[in-house]
Amino acid sequence: MEILTGIVKNLVVIVVVAGFLELLLPDSSMRPFVRFTIGLFIIIAIINPLLSVFYSGNDLKSLAWDLPWEYSDGTGFEDIGVQVNKDIQNTGNQAIKQKVEEQINSLAMLVPGVRDLETEIDLDAEGRGLSQVTLVIVSNRSGSSSSGDSIAAFSSREEELQNQEEIKDKLTSMMKNLYGLEESKLKIKFEGG
Image (cartoon, rainbow, N blue to C red; front, side, top):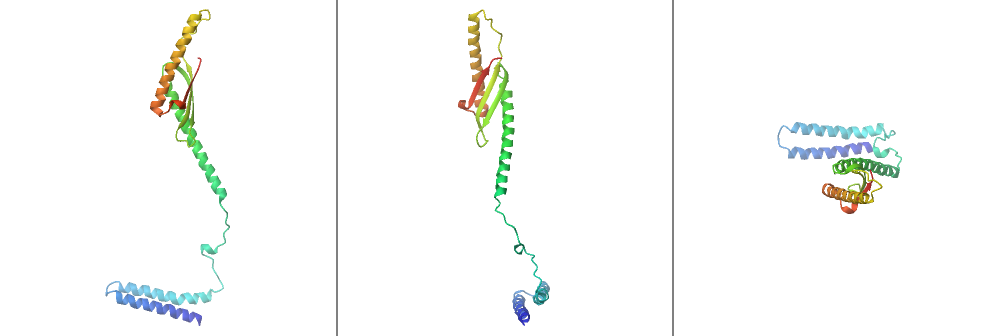
């Protein structure tokens, strides 16, 4: 009896909706399509309760919320993601650091008096800028002074200090102009050569 009342209720609703559609739609070529659609609804309204009788014991768990899931808090994935992100940033920062060091080496070698150079840069915490640049320069010496001539050695040392100061000024100016680096972030050291 329950099935019959369900079928009758559905059919009454479909007939009422069909009556309104017949009134609202003018006589046109769409009327056969509307009747076809209403016929499909009538078939569904009749077949659906009948099928529920035949398959009443078989509850199909086909919907996603019916399936059992094992839930995890997911914190492990977040930690792994953060670590992967840090690794990617570190790899990128190392590549940038190496390229900038090579670039600074190439530019500094153009300064007269610089024979060999070792550059070490430090990136800021975010990896977006230079926080410290250290240049260790092996300068050219024009000649070795004799130990017997103390005045020549003294003037040679003075000349060497003056050359080092010129090299330091040129490199500082170059780093300011090309990289926007402040003097406080630049360290220049000289080693004998």
